[in-house]
Structure formats: structure tokens, C-alpha cells
Length: 481
View 1: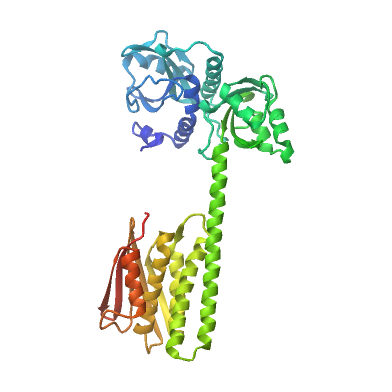
View 2 (view 1 turned 45 degrees about the vertical axis):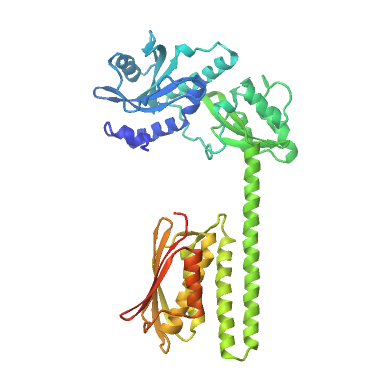
């Protein structure tokens, strides 16, 4: 999907600062559309008139544009008031409603100002067929919208210092709206906003009460009040914050209303996010539990490896010693995967780091007297946890086999590990410059590799002897992208 900047650039060069300003405007104009119960359309001036480069429908009422308007040029009869708003830098209200199919549309054109110059025109378009009664809610919503629209015409909105945090859980107009004066006194609170604060423990009406004092009295028992909370509830800064009390959590966002740089009030949006915060805490607890499980599994596997190491020291038969050493190495490889998982928040393993450690360990353990150079090409990427242990064991066995059989009687050798991802499919090759193989291996390690490739990773494997060494090619399914 094209960005607003990319759409605007289709109709001629647009300075970067203007593109950034308009992008910030449309990132936040849903609030104005919802407060206005009207569509907002952003127009860019072109040689032949104006072209629509952005459109926002209200979520609080019906839209006047059933079809997409972005890219549509303004009709001949609309160019006049759009041009007046652009050139004379004033709000232009159409004298007569515009008829669209079977209903009339009331339209206002406002100049979008950035640092003293007009860079676009914004129209507010509302259907006269869906006129609401002049309820207190509608009067205050539209009054708040008018305040923000006038800020646009003075170059004071969007607020460029706004720190609103992540979009998830962000309050919207339908969640609750309050209007504050310059001292943080509540001049209006929507029914939903009152419900939000009543869940927080506030009793009675909020009208004509200082919101910072009301909220601080609710949270003061929990200790020192966050300065951000005071700034937001007073409407002094365009920030977002959370407040929790009595088992409830509210997300608050303030939008200061300014007039030529002087703060005259604020619009405050609030949302009850109690369930959302509870689920987030549950997920954090779950993540911590999973990480602790991986940590304990890693510790237990390391204990098993240590016991195998002790047992191997007490065994005299060389074959038994070798078998216990191989078992110890395999257990250590699985422990390494769980160690990696215990340090991450998701069930994904950054496999390239794991390959570097496990391949080095396998080469050193397999033949301490041989200097093995390990070369890696390509990327394994992120591997889901359910496939990581199997894949790590496969690579460890193949590296071990190459060192033990390919470099027998030599002092040094080289192993190349190549990887290529195609979505959930992984192509890997382990090649060595050893003496090669006469036939496909049939030992226990090779049997383990075949079983894991076929049954666990639903793939295929092929051993090949080549000039100056041997290689193993495998194609497996590891899920994810």
C-alpha cells in the first residue's frame, strides 16, 4: 500500500519537510473525523486544480464517500473555494450544500499550514441527511474538532513533540472524550469517559473538577505520582500514559489546544484497558515461565552430560568410552539449544549463532589433534524451537562424521557449512576437503541423522563423494519465514 508521501509525489515533487508534515497529519486525523462525524479529504494543489491525496472516514457516523476518492481531481464547481482556502489562508464554508446522488453534503475547506505557509487544503464533509440533534455530546465533540481544525490552519497541529506510544491500546474517540480548560478543569466528559473513571474509583460528577487532583488522589496510595500522569491529566503535553487504581487501568492521551502558541485547553481521550493489561501481564508471566523451563532443562541436560563424562572416565574399554563421549556430545548439543531459548522472549532460535558454537564444539570433541577450519556461507535465519534441536543434532553429527572419517591421519582440514532459506524450506550443505567416502555411511550417527531428517523435518538427505572431499546435501522443512 502506497504511503501518503508516495501518492503525493505522483503529482509532482514534494519537499521532504512538507511530506513529513502531511504524513503526521493523516496519522492523527482519525480523531478529528470522529469528533466531527464527518469525512476528511486532503487536497494537493496541482496545475489544473486540486487532487485528493488522502481520505479519512468517521467511525462515529456515516461516510459521504462510498467510493475511493484518493487520486480523484476536484470537480470544476469545487475548485473555487478550495483555491480561496489555499491562496487566502482562510476557512471557507460552502454557501450551498453539494448534492451527492440523493443527499446533500455540507463542506468546509481549511488551509493546512506549516511554518507560516499553506501546503495543502483539508475539507470536512458531512451528510446533511444524517444531521444529529444538537445534544450536549455532539456540541462538545464538534467544538473539540473545531479547536483542532483551527490549529491546523495556524500550523499548530499535528503536535510534532507528541509522544503517543504504541498504537495498541491507544484510546479513540468512541472510548471516551473529555475537554479541559487551561488549568486542567473538566468542562465536559462524555458518558464513556465518566464510566472509565468510575471504574477507576472516582465517584460523582467530574464536571468543574481539576482532573490532575482527582487522579492523583486515586493513585497516591501506591506511592509517588508519575510526572507524566500529571502532565497528561492537566493537558499540558501531547503524551500518552496509563493510570491504574482499584484493579482498573486506563490509557490516557492528551492533545493540548493552543491558540498562537498559548495553551487554552486540551482534548483528553481515555480508554479502559484493564483486560488488555491483564492479558499482557499473563503473557509476561507465561514467557517467564517458558524461559525458566528451558533454563531448567538446559541445567538438567548439562548434569546428564557431566554424569556421562564421569562414567566415561571409569570405563576402560575404548568402544565404551567413545560411545559415552558421543552420547555426551549429543546431550550437550540439545542443552545448547535450550540455553539459547532461555535467553529469548519467543520460541525462535537465531540459528546462525547456534551453528557457529555447536560446529566448533563438535569439531574439537571429535578429533582434538586435528586443526579444523569451519567456513559458513549463507544464513539459516530464525528457526522455531520445535525444529531447532533436531537440526542442531543433524549438523553436529555431520560435522563430527566429517572430522572423524574425512580427516583421519591428517593435522588440519576445512569444513564449509552452506545454508539457504526459501520460506519454510531450508537447503543446507556440509562439505569437507577430506579423503571422501566410498559409500553412504551406515553408523549410528548416520542413522540418527536419517531418522531426524525424514521423520522430524520431513526432508531428504544425500551423501556425495566429490573431488577433494565429500559433501552432504539436505533439504528440510523448518516452518516460519
